[in-house]
Image (cartoon, rainbow, N blue to C red; front, side, top):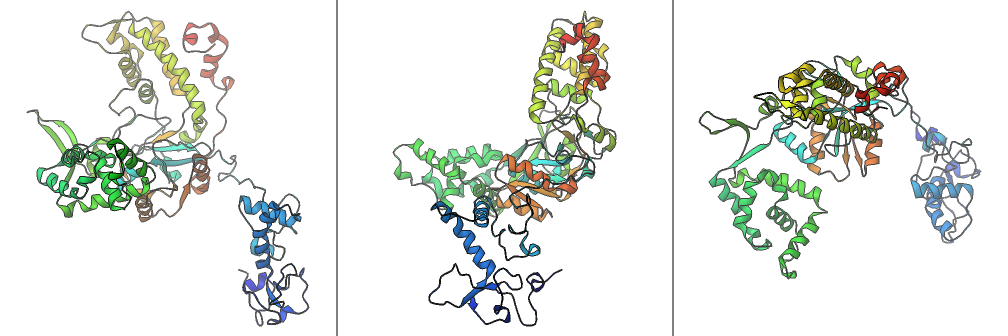
Length: 557
């Protein structure tokens, strides 16, 4: 590794690099050196007039630094700038600076404006190389899990993520929903197995069950005592009603007015109630204050929760497990292990039938191995393109359910068309229609069968990984987070070993930061198969299908 003496051609025996001005003659290199020579960085700049210390000398880089700062002001005053000063002005306005210092060797600060070949100045952006051999840069695939700071706090509390939904996205168009924090996973997470199923779509898997909060009478009394200091600061001064409302809605305590008032008062930012002639104006002022303190409030809530035990407040968190034979409600502790038990399951296990999405989830097979995932990579499309596909298929789905609705119910069955299609998709047998309805002809069954095959061929915004276990945050390799992320979230990520953390201010910056994780990327995204290369798409879109009533029903001409 070169030393500073090597970079600036100094004699290490008699000279040392200094960024401080000094008197001429204090070092041997001051004599007989022209400003253009690279043998010494020390010189007296004739453009700097100093009538008090005419023999003062300083490093050329220091003079260049001062000139670079002054250049924008000179340009604003209408002064003519040379090529080097003009470039420095641009760099200072758009980022950079000192890049044009002629006295700085290329190996020290980068190529200078005087020595750079044409077309290689710092203002030009150089396209990065792909992190996957043979794949266009930006077309690679990447594994990530999106989560909000609030949900990350719950993960910290229980000790992990129970059966999380992890996305496989195109790095150029990563999935942005479900949370503003993106945890970047390794490509090994995308390997399918019995305990790590991977689906080529949103699989409508089980969601995290709601937590039931139980606060006994003694704890409720102690909780009320924690708010005696703000009793007179509430808009309506009814502290009892506010505390009981807080207890009944403990899971949403962050939205409670009494919590916000206490936070603002402790932080010395609570508006003076006497300054408002109407209660609603005071309440509005509180909300306006809170709008700019989201990160600080989140950290305060964490600290508040930690104070509860010492204040004698016991909040029991539990999961509802149904009813006993006697009709009593059953609960289980809200532990990580119990969350995992509740959330295990495959596609369509969300326990609510949304219709088309659930049908696709149960009718489409999951990936068998990593090669399956790679070969299907062309199905991942941008959100805008996927939205158009959904609109088209939703119209066809509505038409299909309407045809089923017009059939007569079999005795003892009153299933909706949505539920019937779900059961057919799950069994993958169109003849199941005869179990629920009378008068179904072969044409309708054929339509249902082709419709389900079309669903299986549809593209998706992302693939879904659903590990059947708890996943630790430490299993991820890095994170992309908002610039205003609460400190508690950042501290937790770092405590889990995630030191590769990048901050963003808008969605475009967030997208670009995915490209920072080149080592986590795998494969690429070729073009989606065109009709004449795919037998099913060819049948649906051209030739014989043109006059087929089934194809017209599905929206293909």
